[in-house]
Image (cartoon, rainbow, N blue to C red; front, side):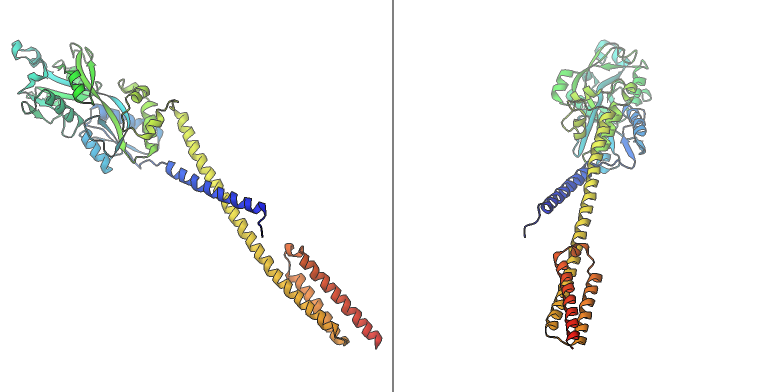
Length: 438
């Protein structure tokens, strides 16, 4: 039998709601983000620019989330990447071009890391002109600090010295450049860091050191991660005593490829919408960071730097509302499907009950028909009375047991009652006529 249109529509609607539920739950599952129990930020040695920036990011994160944050002192970029991949830290600042970023994603460029070739003033200005250090090539035979092993500073220093063919011609020492102030045997240091590095400021503002220029055009052509940069005169009075040509790369904030989207968004808000740029004037503004964005940029950052300028707390709120809407819709769909399932189970149970009662009604009808046949050939008053009692009993049992309102309104039930009434009336007339005949 053809199903009613309303039932077909209910089935299609139930399937549609089930599909919406599955899709909504899938969307909510893949969009949901969790933060690490403790957000650990890998920086570099204490006192360096990475470390100081890490502390400012920590303060911003503390204001934006209840998750505790921790600044981890490391030896530098390679150490940070190794710890990130090992799960020992969750966020790191690394020097662009100094390490492999396999398995990692860039949250944003942070600031320029500039190459500073620091030399003692006595080598720059003392003695006869032919013995003075006037270029990097003159550092042959000198002792040079290249930074701690595994740091981005060490990698950049080796690149610079390789360009000037000084590898193997100078003594390279894997010590921090601040040792220049305490170790007189060190003649120079190749330091790649932001110009706001507090340790670098202390060294150069002491008046005991100066800077050498580098061949910026050649280095930028040889190493893709370097760009030409000029250090202005008196950046750290009294050094340098003139504008110095150099090269720079970008410090990068990186996370693991599988980092929570929520963590990346939280970092971007902390970097660009908090007061980090007021503490560090060389930190890139959002527009600068977007223009410098490298290829391995995290997808959340790409959405952050979209053409519509999705910056600020409002976007975060809208994202939260969108994710919440999906979840609420999924919950609503789940409630509807649960109700629809319950309703269909009740309908099935109701139909089964009606079917059982119809079967009993059919049995009662058969019993009344059997009595109908018996009374046709029966003339004994006592037997007729017994048959009358049986019909009455069948009718009472039917009225007592067959209580479903849908059955009571069924035409078969009306026929049964009419059958009982006619049979009772017929037997009563027959009893009356039999008595009068006697």
